Every structure is written in structure tokens, then in C-alpha cells.
Length: 419
Ligand code: IMP
Ligand code: MG
Image 1 (cartoon, rainbow, N blue to C red):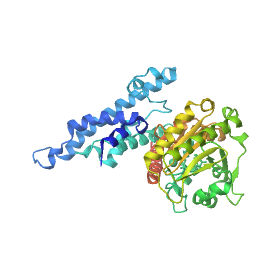
Image 2: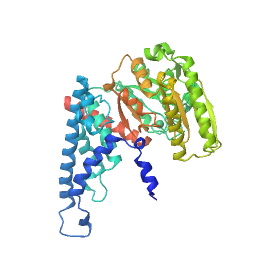
Image 3: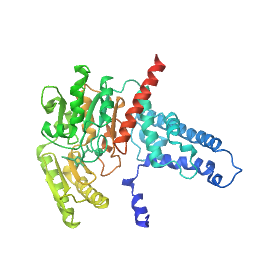
Image 4: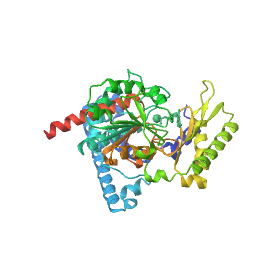
């Protein structure tokens, strides 16, 4: 039931992506003008094919215009005036783009698969626009040359929430194909463990398959795991039983990260822990507090399920308290809703992706793609990766598989063109 409360709650900015909402609004106009809902009960209307053709043309024109606005924004970025672009006036929250977005062609591609222009009752939706943006991003990456680094979030992106990457997961052959083609892979997950064994337990399907594969040893070395957002790094190796080896921090930490003081880390985690404990008490949550050396979180007691509102309330309170604190302005942190837990980690995924780029010899943001499920502006941990590279926002592991198939298909098209 859509109560007034629910509607207003959903309108809160932290639950909206302004760029997607804005594009959705633009596409609503041709939908209103050209869709023909009465054709289902009146005979004299044009055929659905004709209607779809007109609507498709109008949707595609709009996406071409948005593509141009993004190109103009990129030009402003290059001149150091991105805050003066027309796009910035229209969508104030819009950040920087690492590549242009092939929105027109991506729309045609998705329309051929989702029949968006054929619809008479359901206008272009949030998910339609999200998928068009993903396709546009991978089209631009593939056209711009080899995709050098792909980083993946873990939970919900590679496997279902709280599950493991088991040998039957269809994402495995796709990741191996990327590696065979020379792309590096980073698994940038919030899951924070200090022992290789724990990551092996979560990722064994992929690690075993990589070990067994006949790809050249040099390609096999192109996989690392960045855990705890940006706190622990392990590289693939055939030499240990867990196929992972701890990488000393000196080999991947960025200069700025060396400045993070232990005293600040303790102070921030203390503050976060106090806030979490307070919310657990006030909201009568059946939760256990988990404190680690680089994170603090709350997890449910024996199979309990927290409701979404409680989880979000907990994140927003903790985030606000940390943002307002002195230590929170000195040290990057990430407070997020993990689906049925809340964690505060030191650092965030922008640092995780930057560390992967550094580890692999300085890969650029415009040659890197981060795939994740959490891109809302608050309480979501993949959002920060947008500061380091291009991104694709997926809703479940099946969409990740679909996206990798799209990359592969576009890659083959591109190679046929250049041959
Ligand atoms: P991700 O989706 O791969 O980023 O993983 C997020 C999930 O990892 C969280 O929802 C937690 O359930 C789990 N997790 C385990 N340890 C940690 C930690 O130290 N920090 C944050 N999340 C953790
Ligand atoms: Mg996730």
C-alpha cells in the first residue's frame, strides 16, 4: 500500500539519484504525447509498430541531447569550470564524468531488448534509465580502447547478500574471459578480514577456477581482493592453499592513506560505536555490536531481520554524528546499510579503487569500471567509487552477468569494426 508517509519518505533525497530522475522526467514527455493507451480498446489507432517508431525517435533524440550536455560538462571539467556547466545547473548533484556516455546508441540497444517504446501504460522507469546509463558507460569504455581494470563489489553484485561465490556461479567464466583478454580484476568489498582464509571461504568458486584455468600465469596475477573498503589487500597466487597472499601496505597504499593516524582511527571508531550502541538501545534492536581494527558494525542476533527504515535511521544518525565531528573531517569513513547490518568502515571504495589502480601500475579512471549495487548518496558504499572511476549500477548478480555479456558482445562488434 502506498501511504502518504511512504510517498514522502521515498522523496527524501538520499533515496533518489538526481541524474536518473531528471532523465526519467525528460522521457515522460514523449511518453505522455505519443503512447496510445486507448488503442487497446479502440480500433482506429495506428499500429503499435508505428507508435513505437515515433516514440523511439523522440526518446532517442532526447538521449542524444543529454549526451551533448554531458560532453559540454566534460569540456567544462577540462577547463576547471565544471560547476558552471548547463548540466550542473539542471542537476546540481552531478559529479565529474570520466568518459562521454553513448546514451543515444545505448537507448536503441536497450529498447531492442526491453521494448520501452512499445509500452502504452508504463513510462520509462528508474530501472530503464539505470540500465541505459550502464550500457552507455560500457559502450564508451569499449569504444575508447581496452578496459584495463574492472572492480567488483561482493555482496549483491557477485553473489546474493551474505552468500559466497560458489563454483556454479555464472559470473566465473565471464570474469576469466575478461582476465584472458588482459583486463585486471579487483574485488573491492566492504567485507573486512585480516586472514586470506576468510576471503577464500567467500570467493572460492572464482579462486579455484582461476587456479585450474590454463590462462598464462601473467594474466592470472591480474586479480586482487581489496577488503574492508580500502583496508586489506590480497593478491591471487597459486602457491598458497587459499590462493591468496597478503600484500604489504607499502605496495598499494596511496600517499594520502599513509597520513591516516592510528589515534584518529580509534577515535572515529569509538564515536561510531557509541552512536551505534545508542541507536540499538533507543530503537530496541536485537543487535550485536562487532568491533574490528578498521570497522565497527551491528549485526542481527540469531536470524533476526531488521526493517529497512530502522537500518537507514541507524546509518543516517551515525553518519551525521561522524560528519559533525572533528575526527570525521580528518579521516575518510563509510557508514552504510548492508541489507541486514550496518557498518562504519575506515576509508571508502574510492580509496579501494584508487589502490587497485595504483597496484596495477597507475590505471586511469577512464579505463576502470566499478560494478556495484549501492549507489544511493547516503548509506551506500559503492557510491564513493564514482570519485575514482566509471561505474555501473546493478540490482542483482544476474544483472552483473548480463553486463559482462554486454561488454563481451560490444567488444566483438568493436573488433569486427576495426579489423
Ligand atoms: P560488499 O557488498 O561486498 O561491500 O559487502 C558488504 C557486507 O560485508 C556487509 O553488509 C557486511 O555484512 C559484510 N562485512 C563483513 N565484515 C565487514 C566489515 O568489516 N565492514 C563492512 N562490512 C563487513
Ligand atoms: Mg554490495
